[in-house]
Image 1 (cartoon, helix red, strand yellow):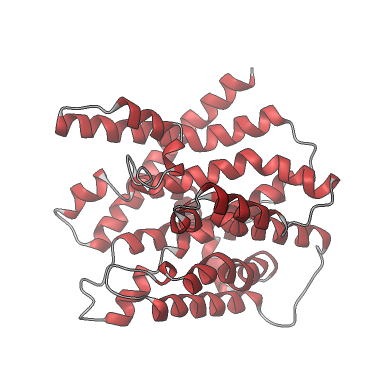
Image 2 (tube, rainbow, N blue to C red):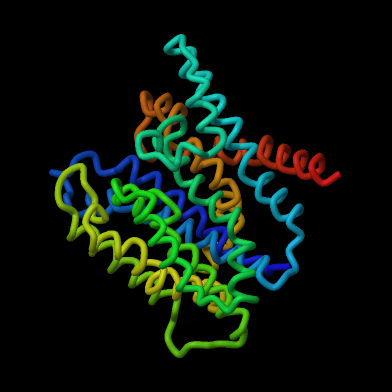
Length: 340
């Protein structure tokens, strides 16, 4: 069984917060503080951080085990699906109430995660859940990856090349969508997390003469500045350019998040202590609920009456309630039902 890393639970809160401020820039206009405004627009790197974290945690927990496929898929399903299903259904019912129409086909494409495979559907329902299609695709295939790596001798960095080639074939008419929104284009982020987990398993006593936590923060800042510099214009992002995609998909996992995670696991720093505090742990555990509700009905309602920072606090509060009263309840209930 994997070791629990409190600082990595805390990093989930950081990643979710980054995505929030990417969607809702706290700098009101670009004309006031253009550099700061552009930095917040590139906070979509929180998704990259989530993907890297998922790869690391799944490998850390399951790579050394003989996987019980039933338990593995029950755990993944119970963790992700109940909250997603409840909030997606609520969203479609609200749309039905406002428009007096219910698109059953679109609803089914959403609750089955299929929408994320299509460019024209990716932002339907709960817009940000396109990333859950990518996550679920990874969870579905992860046990097979471990088999190939352990028994077939596949290089872990050979696998993302295969997926990139497949993506170029399947999405040859929509390469940008493939690179930005599908597992085929984003697989390197997951595999980088897997590689780090395997490295630490083999080198448990490894130590470094430099502070890896701050090296990770430094290179994260450098990568963010690179995306800001590449940003081609208003309403666009640095990763709209090929070099920006390379920074987002390769530079961050390898040169920023890898040393950051090593530091958070191996080093005692003020950053690790902060991420391990009780309040940040609660915020980290409720970050999935936060990610699901931060963009959509709740934000639209609160934004009528409050500023960005107040809305940020309110949605975090609602997320904690949702996590503690609903998410945990259905997670345990589904595990109990499916495990019998």
